[in-house]
Image (cartoon, rainbow, N blue to C red; front, side, top):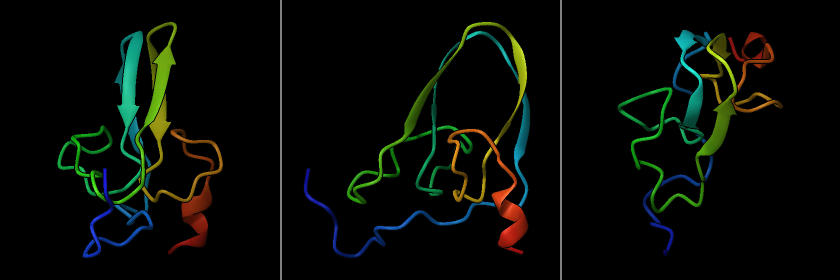
Length: 86
């Protein structure tokens, strides 16, 4: 798929705080571009940006903190990088 020239090729910050969630075991696709209307999960809004969602699998039900600033070094999980964005 071609990149759309009107879209920035860098992720956009969705929020400066992580998304705390209780998730069931299963497969998920985390929004890496920051454009999803279903944040923190992918809705396809990345098409044309060259940015791909991050697939992750939870083996068991778990409380997780998913990155919303898109600066984490451990996607999709928050690593505190948002502290440097405020």
